[in-house]
Length: 281
Length: 228
Image 1: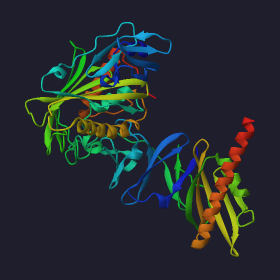
Image 2 (image 1 turned 135 degrees about the horizontal axis):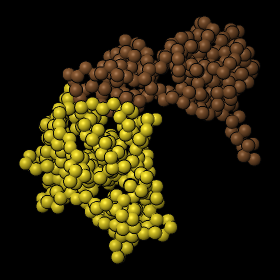
Image 3 (image 1 turned 90 degrees about the vertical axis):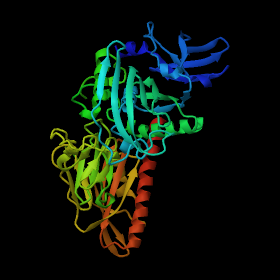
Image 4 (image 1 turned 180 degrees about the vertical axis):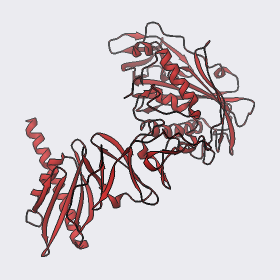
């Protein structure tokens, strides 16, 4: 069953820097209300029946898993590289499937229309062929050699550039992108979203970045990312059905959607169906 | 299947898109630059985005998400991610039958739209949304006095009501085409004899607000009785 599968993944449920001693946060994960408390012995994650769950602090967030046999939490090694600034970007509540939020993050064709004059602009709408693969060893979806013209690719970008992207899906509700870093062309900025499924049709999205950017303030970086994500939310809350359809008959893809097609197949094959629909509505 | 009056033609000018519900179906209604009207399932076949959020480019409606264009009969005409590609004919927005008559836009959830007959010589007045069922709105139109006198009901059916009122020694027709887009939420699209003066239109418009207050008060009172 989809819930059993979902319970054995780890999810970000709080920003680590907000969980200072004595702080408490009420939240919802996979339909289960949770209380997250920072005590002098560490974080305690507890449900309404008093049952406690494991936690770990990674990528500036508190993670938990509700199942008895959680799969290992993936790594983002770039987060530990010296010189990078790790920036947790707060949280955005979205009334959509957690899987729709991830799929949108993997999509570049919407940039000129949804993030107009920031991540894209007409007439630069063409999506050139790129490469998509399932890396069986890590069991991850990867898209590489993704190129797109962007008027203002990052807070640190002065003018338009063709940005190179790589995308990685290390878990059903997590997506990581690597993109050309404007002030340091030999390196890549890392931007991720950690999606916390509150239910099948509602999620909290925790964006996180690991950047080479010494110029912009923390607030500016967060604001840039929040602005992008609020634009995405206006799309995500208006997709019908709210859950992600995995039957190819329900939504017609094109070549630009190869990442989305691979992601949907990968979810289906794994049985990661929480937030998905498998039959034609 | 029902044909519903979903709006006044004048409230949907060229290059605009609106959203409506007919018989439980989410529908985008839009008008092209040259004035052609179309009604489509409110869902882009690509990624399910509501087309009512889209934008009109010439004779096409473009989806807000990826800018896919849809033109005559709902056929996809352009995919910006692949500008050289001729979109396959199978990519279609689902089209509904739509007709404009007597200043109203009529949409059928199934089959061909069949607008109801209305008396001639009417001009649009306004649209007004009631937080009531259609029957309660209709009842309030016939029972709310206008300048002291109850209006004379000319005709009344499930789709609306035609009334006659006397104003300044003139007799005017008023038609209220009623559309219950969502259960318990009815929009009255109002038309009045085109000889009505601007001042008469203002007083009729105020009377329509009184009709709404009466209908909604009636619903509130009944709700309280049921609760008791």
